[in-house]
Image (tube, rainbow, N blue to C red; front, side, top):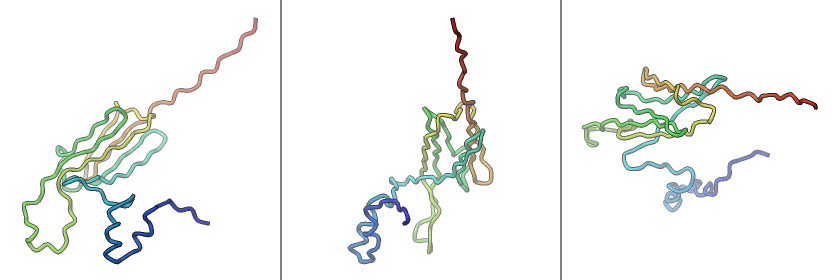
Length: 145
């Protein structure tokens, strides 16, 4: 027996008829875009000492990327100008994104946000968040009277 994530809209995506196409914008698989903004895909890894967040932002300038940590939430945002070229300039396919982007990630409590560092090289922003020292339990000796 295989475990599968419950998806109440699964059967609707099987339809190829126009009636079934209407359901593709509903449910957990729906692609959400708000106006001209888009969500930034990230990779998050950790080891014993750090949590590392990486995101690909090719073609951006470092000064166009905003990174902040507030109340345990890492926020990466920015904006790139849309190309001045018109859609009728011979495009057969247009996948490069422009406009605003924003990504918020809830950080674990073990992260020391005050010591976080970010670097941007070769189109990849890397945010390194060191972990705090875990407080060890203090052993008490039991005295007798």
